[in-house]
Image (cartoon, rainbow, N blue to C red; front, side, top):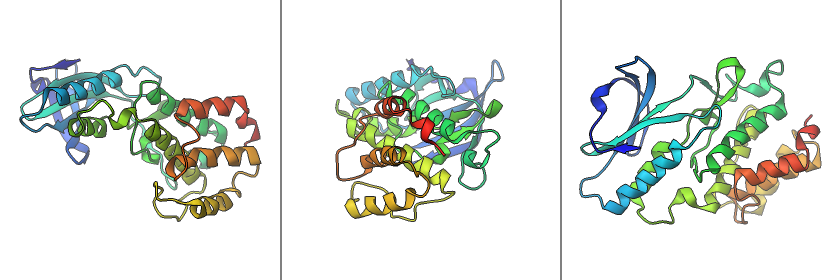
Length: 267
């Protein structure tokens, strides 16, 4: 999966596609085939411990095992001089947006319960391999070919940056609590799209108390008139709060979705 020889010369880098602390992503082209791809460049400090390098390689291997439909594919990776690089292939998709690209405003193309189920299923594909996105937002998903919803941000860059900063076995991407946090972020994303905007609350985090949750319940009860559906989304959101997450991972949430046949309750 990870080459020690720098393979950068095999790719033609174009404009930046995004960046964050310790990493940058570029639109790129594979020179030998002309295939479009994304070039991820993650900074690596000199003198890195062997355990930190192995930790990052373990993260890459998990991403390399992603085979779920409509998730990005990791094509190649290597260590360069002061950086790690990864090549990612994914379908072009327009990021979801509450106002400009909102599937809940396209009833002829998207049934509301299908949007929730499809996005949750994509999150399940990450959690199956113990991958935590860590920053799930509406822009993590997009509408791609044939009006299919795609995952367009796996969180690979943030995972690698954190793996270089935390060289122990109990890294964040294996944390049950943060898998629950992903589920809460997924629920917030669905609610945000349905409401065509934010909840007008402070950022959801572990400082929330019962008053915050009660305010949210009152607001979203207008869009989830069925008690079972309302309670499901409240149970998802508890991953942000002072209580233990009701769902340890997205697969637990999906199991309840099917067990209670929640799609039948969608208005």
